[in-house]
Image (cartoon, rainbow, N blue to C red; front, side, top):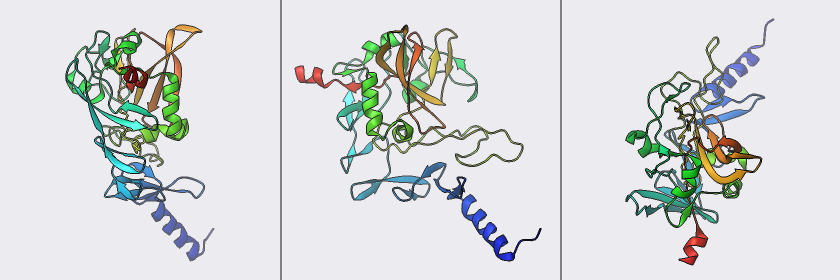
Length: 292
């Protein structure tokens, strides 16, 4: 069957426009825009030399670990110093809440660091000390330790606290990407397929992941999960953060929030054993501060 030259030309143009460095076909004649590996909406974001710029009031800015947008103004993250060990943590105001903008890294009994080595699919041994991993992703804590490890004036968030945060970020279907940091969510040490693209014929499908936009300065990183039963660490593909909320039907479990490397969603889950090890993000305890 022969096609007119105009149809052939149209197919060539469409193919070029969908598979160059800035566009990919998203199916059903939908074109997705890419900035580096990150999908973005050109109606509300800009791409500058491979870096996403977010609007903040009347200006454009690049989300970083030190700056964020609050009520239409670009602000520097404030610093909290933990008096127990002198470690500094950046903090951000998101809606009516004040959060630490980093995972907690206080070396308490009942905490561990993630391992190194292995691959994105295999686990590694769990370590009590691993400065390189701890300094970047924070320590992982069992639930009992997580309940008391936040410094004075801060506390472990409840499931309601997480719900308030994710609702402010647009709901579970989009909050994950908005809360993710702009780095460390894209696989770089394996052969993978950028988000939204089809794998080459005959190739195994491995998603490179979806990077974050870090709209509110929360800067979530994939700290992983530690199994107490297997003494194994599963890291760098997802982040898991404890809540203080328990499940009465399952007395040895607690709720937690998770974000996957290849998803824009947030998930508030339950029935994970309290003896496992997850990350901790502290939220400011305003009642405690008001009493002081």
